[in-house]
Image (cartoon, rainbow, N blue to C red; front, side, top):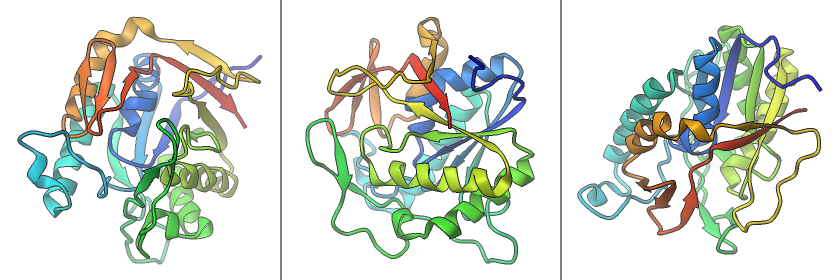
Length: 251
């Protein structure tokens, strides 16, 4: 079976919020950049609706300063991962030709179960999920063309755990890949409830030896989670293992 990254030299990872690139794909990005692949990370929002780890940054919740802080965290993490960015959807070169810049905003979410998220009740007109797939995918396609990408990687159809911005990012990336004539691959998440992951047609990358190299990128996102051994503890108290076994499927 041909692997998703065979003969690929320039890859775009399309993520929803700062920290997703490290939590979901950080070890994979380091694996690729270490092998000489050029990786760009394009982020749809700045995670404006996110909470903050209790402590000295708590006062940033709901303020413009949180956006600036999360951009800085993302920049630091990307340097550690060896990736280019940050780039944000809606801002050149990730904006369709002839349109003024647009800022896509975190849509928010709610927990449906302890491990599955769903849409919140108050996403506004600027929310990423309020944007049409044609508009957002045209922006992403413009970036793929400007970046001369061979491949775009994003979430699987359920967004990994149901976050509405992740689900929307999947549909946007699939449509953008078709517009730009670029291949699309999806990251297969290991379910948080402990059930077996979908492995049909999936190439698995065992990157357990990269924990130490990944730690600086994880710690860069200190407003969102803390690192405890081989786990991360999110600002809401949820604990999950550091993602070091990553599945990728060409679609």
